[in-house]
Length: 297
Image 1 (spheres, rainbow, N blue to C red):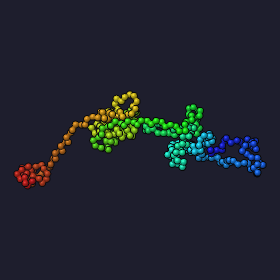
Image 2 (tube, one colour):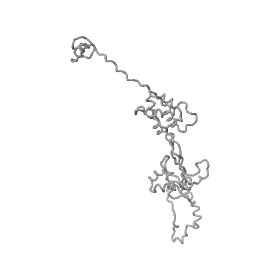
Image 3 (cartoon, rainbow, N blue to C red):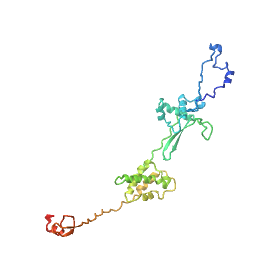
Image 4 (cartoon, rainbow, N blue to C red):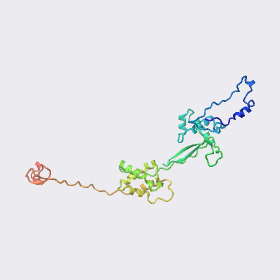
């Protein structure tokens, strides 16, 4: 809407149709030399910060004024801008209900599309696609199919079953927990199907710590989790890993009594009782003096 309306008739045609236009009164009717009332454009050509809007949107016969203005605003935004209902309601005064209705109008007439895509991290996000000419950006160049103004909400998917329980470590250790987290995050290098979310990793990490506590190194744990995986697609790799951590948990290591402290090697010294040389702490007595005079020890 920053350039002059191209649907307006050229000046030559306007002069030919001078007094024949249905909305223009003659000189005698107007009572003066000017023409009748109506719109007059006082335009200046934009050279920066402008957006080209098609008349099919600006003069759309079915869209509400709010929907036309909202589409104009969205088409002027840069890529990756937030155009969800909450963000738009914070920007404008119309409120979430009216903005949601206007977005549904634009979807119904093909000016907006909402697509659910998976990010590289595995999350499902909603992406909004703005179409300045509905139907031109698709494989079929025909007009976008009309959608109902109030589409029915899809049925909610049943909630996922919780992951199987994993063994718990005997004592928390931040060092072992970090080792377990790094081990789980690196499983995708062994098999790309073992790409885990942060939530799945938090659930599985204590089970890996329980293995590390039993004198197993990270290499042995990684082999136990990734060996002999089924050839078909893994619908839920975190559930398979949780099952292996619980079902294949090795026994605790055998009890080992603590080693006796090493014997103290004393230097040679003289006994305070008989002045005989012996090995012992300085200022002490030899064994014979301690036996003969225990009260003096």
